[in-house]
Length: 310
Image: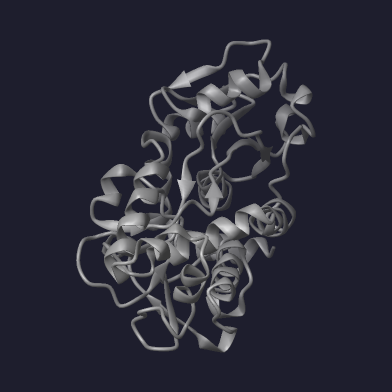
């Protein structure tokens, strides 16, 4: 990944990223709500319970370009922000299918039967996308955390990414070169109070020193900047932002193993969209066959330099 590109794009999209990151630590995932919404949407779309089951030939036939009720017949219209930033999308060009979310989007389109040239992109602000009201897209992707509050205004697919916690340090700090969880055991770590970030320090690293607890990620970042801690733990989208924009010499040491119920990112659809059930089936298929994990490794761990710590 070109670090200069990352810095530029991340700067321009800071507001959208902060909105996502804030939702991450404070809100619980709503997978059940999203799934319930998907089921309801499938039922309302065609009035046929078998289509919502996802297991019959009728259901498979309903999830094809000939049957899906898209904004433009025969075309799958996707939405993201302006600009879209790395490592989620590369060069602010979602149509190149490079970057984790761009790659996932085209994988979902393929699952639904759309060739790449049948995919079109539009741009919408983050808040407008999750606001109630008609949409100019079929699916939107922009690190939208699935939350019960948002699920009252829009539909979500099932999660395409389980948000991971990441260790952030600074060049020259002792923790910056850690290559394993064991390497972090004697480091002085910090995280925001009441977050999964703080819990993951205890559960994944079990450090020798009690972690420092801060009222906010901003305070944790300042402590790292001032050398009061060796590293802090935040969710991965926040880690990308902090290291690209806010912390001079900031480095992502690595991602921590998943613990407990993960916050999830999902595609956004219009409320009660007739596409929700089919799009959810497509995401589920990509999760089950390992495609989502492979793409996360390719674009987030390998390219973006956020390896998994073991």
